[in-house]
Image 1 (cartoon, rainbow, N blue to C red):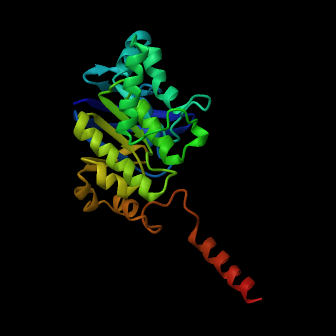
Image 2: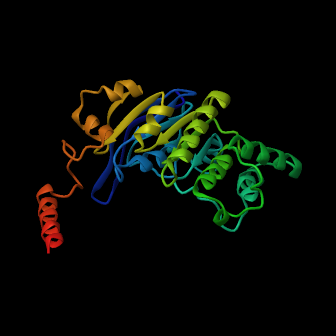
Image 3: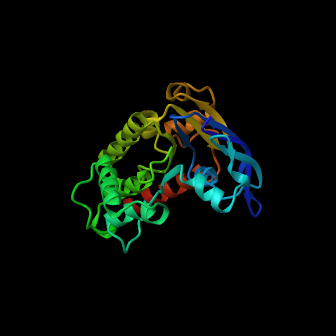
Amino acid sequence: MMIDIKDLSKSFDDHKVLDHVNLTIRTSETVCIIGRSGGGKSVLLKHIIALMRPDQGTVLIDGVEITRLSGGALDTLRMKCGMLFQNAALFDSMTAFENVAFPLQEHTTMSSDAIEQRVHECLQLGGLEGVDELYPSELSGGMRKRVGLARALAMNPEIILYDEPTTGIDPIMGDIINDLIIALRDRLKVTSVVVTHDMRSASKVADRIAMLYNGAIIAVGSPEEIRNSPNPIVQQFIKGEAVGPIKEGLPDRRVLSRWSARGRQFNAT
C-alpha cells in the first residue's frame, strides 16, 4: 500500500471532524473521497501530507509513519507528494513560470537551464503554452488550476493530492482536468487522492470511491459498486436528493413551504 490510514481521529474544540478513519490506497491507484461540504475531506487530505497532526491514529506513506516524523525527515517524505489546492494557491506576485519553478529552486540544486526545461515539461503536461510571463490574475480559473497542477508535478512526485480539482470552473474545463488526472495516472503511474463532491468527476477518474460521512468512511468500492450501494446515505448523496437520511445542515422543509406560500401571495398582489 502506498497510503495506509489507520484509526485516524481529529477534533477541533468539541467538534469531531474525523472519527476513527481507516482507508488504504494502493500504488498507482486513484481514490476519490466524496462527502458533503465541511464533512472533513480536506482535513483528511491535510493529514495525508502531514499539514495537520491527528489526535489519534496513524498515516503511513510507503510504509513510513509520517505522524512521527518532523524536520528534515518530514520534508524529505513530503517531496514524494504534490498537492493541487482547491484555489490553486498560486503566488500572486509570481508569473506562471516562477510559480512552477519555485519548488525546484527551493528544494533542488538543478541548474537554471534544467529548471527551465522541467517547468516547460510540466506546463506542457497541463496543456499550457505561452503562459510563462502571465500572472495568476491574468489567467482563467481553469488555467490557474492547471498551473497549480504543473507546480505539483515539478518535483516528480509519487503521490498527487487533489483538493476539489473541478470546483469553480466550467464543466468543459472540469472535464479537461479529469482527463489530466487520468493521463497522469496512466503516464506517470502516480498514486492519486482526489477530494471532491462532483460525482461526475469521481465516476470518471476513480479506481475506487470512498465516502466520508459523520467523520468516518462508510462505503468504499468501485464507481459501479458505489452507484449500486444499498446504503441509503450513499444513495442520497450521489443522487443529490434533499429528502433522505442526511438531514443535518438542511433547512426545515416546512419553513421552505411557508416561504414558498408567502412568495405566491406576494406575486398575486
